[in-house]
Image 1: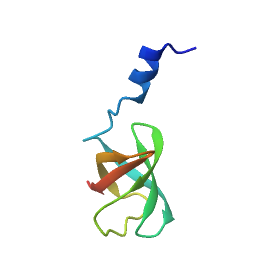
Image 2: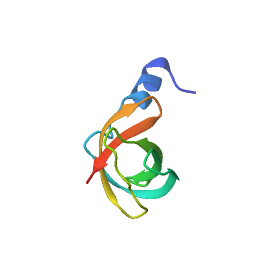
Image 3: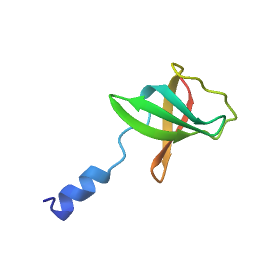
Image 4: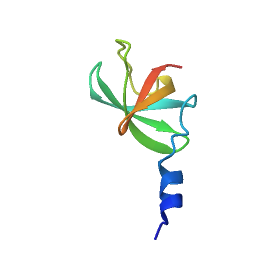
Length: 72
């Protein structure tokens, strides 16, 4: 079981600035599955981009359970 302090540490966002790769296109030009340091995330972008699997990305933030990305 997690104590409250441990639970808060788990929720801390530490992926900002890290680089990753597009694993799959979930919704063209809107949503992707990415891999950052071996962990898969859903991602979106504020920049209109047509990412394809294998494209390098950089994480710039988080919107709930999705990471915000830009071309890396």
